[in-house]
Length: 269
Length: 298
Image (cartoon, rainbow over all chains, first blue to last red; front, side, top):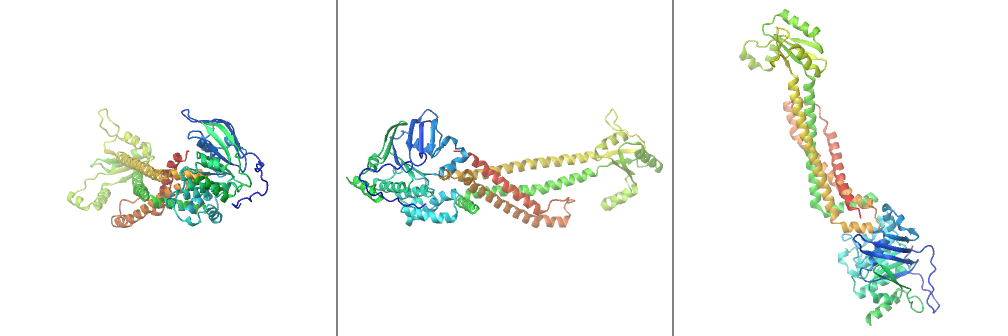
């Protein structure tokens, strides 16, 4: 699978129709509650559906349940009530031993990057492939490819601490996407970055979304969310209080560069 | 590819934690050195003790002035009228004197005359029946001393008591050494496990990331186990080398010069080396396995 953008759709001044969901929704929550030991509420009776190819923002204050949702999605913890399906598969059916295999279908990006500090950029990305038993040839093919996509071709042999925050996050995105997972999760991916750099990361996520990957981004950067004009799900104390399809930009879907320009414009005003 | 990858990871980790790695290796080394000395020593003492046990006989000493007729009467008594006797050997005082003088000429030169009595050497049908024979020949009196059934018998001496003493002594020695060895093995397993734990603790973030990108437990575990095994094997190799040097430099010349002990068979060095190597690898694999179990639970 090549990581190329799908061609920009031509014609039609009206907002584009949503892509018809093919197969089961990528993420499906039905009346999901998550309570932690000690009584803290992570999610409370939350229901939501994310279809294939969508770009969804999860917003909310800290403690609203964004991170809980992310952690549930990678099955780091289990839900207390309700049902939760990813790509049609009930997460309750995935045994402890199967979790690693399940996670290989999900790319995950964190606020604090979570890179392996003693490995070069190249090795960090390659690790995600080695874990899945990827051969040397596989790695030699895919890793430079993905690093080119994320704009890191010149930093292959640098260690994470020799990179800027934005570059580190790009490495993390590259690692999350090198397997071309159908679902990419990003938990506050721009939380540690300045606005300028954040735009670059958002552009990158947008570009990945345009290859057909479903992208779910948890953030509290409201300005950014407003300008991206994507679907927004707002959580408050574990409840879904808003689920709003983005008012899309008139005309064609912007390509990555155009999106960057739009975001930049808003940054300057 | 896979094994190469795990090996590379293990070596990378060892390079980054040289001091704990060295400590683990040293503890394996010391343990194995002790084991390597202990095993042949135990074999020797066991062999010696068994030799003694096999030689259990009852000595029936006749009085110094016993006549040939009396001696014949005692032989009859021993051979025909006593239970549990397998065989009876007569050692005349002349034969005994000759043998003892050969063994210790100066002492017997000083003595001048022959102080030794005629002796019957009685071999029991089973070493454990020796007490019964003794009781038959020299029943205990109520006062606690022993009488003899025939006036020509001066004394019945039971070598089993000495044998028992030797056997007890060796078993005590063996037990203490085994205990010591057990403790040492435990200590080095714990040290290896601690080393691995340290190297894991310093990388728990890394392990977390590995799990997040979908590494299975065993994929994470293998490099650590290999690290332990490599450290153990290294320690084992050094220990074997030292033991071999020690054997060639000290034991071999000693054995040649003094015919050290009756030298019951000990296992050859190659077998011992193999055994030690196995122990080293097992101990360190155990050590790393122990520490990993807890860490991988998320």
